[in-house]
Image (cartoon, rainbow, N blue to C red):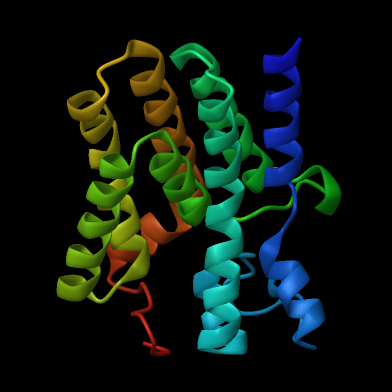
Amino acid sequence: MLPYLVVIGAYLLGSVSSAILVARAMGLPDPRTQGSRNPGATNMLRIGGRKAAAITLLGDAAKGLVPMLVAHALGMPPQVLALIGLAAFLGHLYPLFFGFQGGKGVATALGVQFGLHWLIGLSVALTWLLVAKIGKISSLAALVSMALAPLFVWLVWPDRNLVLMQAAITVLLYWRHRSNIRNLLEGKEKKIGTGN
């Protein structure tokens, strides 16, 4: 019974939209109606600045990290860890509390990865930073780092359930980034910290 409760709890925690709560607390417009209309850290950077973006990023990452840490503390097996990680991620993408209109999931996925194993999270984060430094495009960094994430999981913790969890997260994240992918292919994607 306990594993089911943790899975449900992970989804409900994932359903708490950091961007919307931060926007309300800071008197900013609803991120679902401004900029890219995505309730995530990158859009919050555009409409609210670095502080709003940083708080949103930490909040979204915590939604993935905390359930995984709880699961580890309870000694959950890999197949349950996989369900918990996926539930937290789905909560962010399709939040129960905000009309199932969620973000694209990069920060929450990173939280899940750090919660699974610090080396997995660090590998994904460093890949994101490297690609972002070279390309100056947040979505490109996310797409490259998450494409490599299943490999990082396999190298650090080669359990089929965990690799499949990360593969599912990667596929869903790519689906949520389909407009960004179109913009990248057309050379129209905005760069980090600019309107270009």
